[in-house]
Image (tube, rainbow, N blue to C red):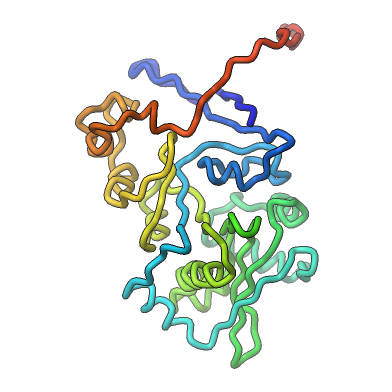
Length: 276
């Protein structure tokens, strides 16, 4: 992996000068290596990834809870099947349905037609998990996924018929995906990022793991604290009173980290003049 640090918004009052960590694949690496290291795709071509707080379910250790079972019972009559993207009929009517859903659920402009079309033509979407209401023979839900068996199933974007919202179809689809990919022999189902309260619904699985920046943790209480309480200093590890920092007491983070950078000495690239 080659790593690039891309500047993000700074806060001089807190001496916070952050960088987004981008990873670029080398010939021997596959996207699964990046998912396992805590990265998610930053490009639909899978040629750039970003380090973030993401969630995953270790499928072989998943234990169905009473809440999981309650959600699954709401989906009686629903079937799911896995369809390769190249075999899926992405019609204009299907596109319009997903765009309407996106405006209502994600917000205006979050998923324009150009972005949706680009995703559906890119390797970041390898398959779709399609949900069908068997009694009416009607498709009611779709999940855009990246699969790299047996290591990674990535639950990317989900769309469903909003007439089914009262039956908690969105949560059913995610829970059924956990069950489905466990049966398919996958190691992890990745569920995307978790930085806001509204994303904590993804943590309704036991065990759940989140990427910390130096590895993976299963402490769901710390995850919820990170979402609900920002560090006072702007730097988590420099806020000794933050519960997430206190949970690290006794841990040698440098030793625990999965990252080790080697400094190369290539000739300096000439980016040219920045003057107009």
